[in-house]
Image (cartoon, rainbow, N blue to C red; front, side, top):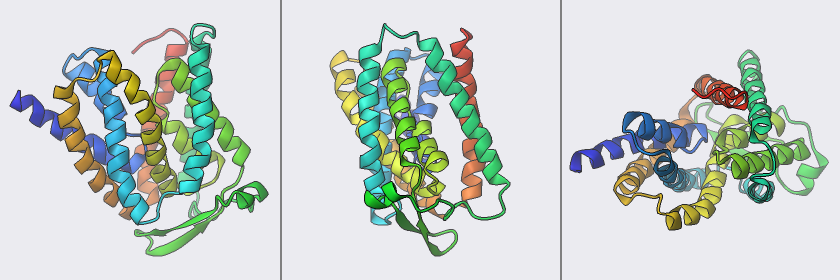
Length: 281
């Protein structure tokens, strides 16, 4: 029992660090480890994953808020579209054929992965590229943050707000209909469609995932799919890991974060695409 708890704490620390850096919540690490490594039933692994996301969000958001890296107004604005999409997706469960959504979102993730490869080849930095957007200015979504790697304050403009909202609505729809996390979609909506720099995109994604996961956690709790023996040590490890990860992310070069993020994006996209065609890995 003690050995299992210690292993969960170590897994939690690693998942918390990765989740805080990439804005993916850490569930992408915990779920396969618990199912493939420990043979845990997938429904309990997903229940633990929900706790992972909340803990990662809580641990990292404190540091990101203090350092003013995340964009709170963008987070709250996009969360409206995600929540509406999740409600619509839940209502459409059993009506729509999920395989079309798997294919659609798989293609979107793969496209975004290759778009990030293109950004890697750009000589100029990836910030300050957004054009002045009247809607973003009216909603006061533009922001700034201090980049500890570049040692300078970065001002950036948010653009293509409708495009970002559409992706976030789709992310919520897929989450409600397919029961998947949407951390990758949140980063894509801000980084690719709204032209925000990757670091505030990742930080803002961490906050948004915690809000979404907290709403889902109630359902999982009453379903009895959250096992305290697994979830508690995981949460303890993740809280520590997320604080460390939020510190590491701010001093990492954006290029390095993309290099780590791209294969994960392509893996998730390829997996969804295959599931859409009835192939399960």
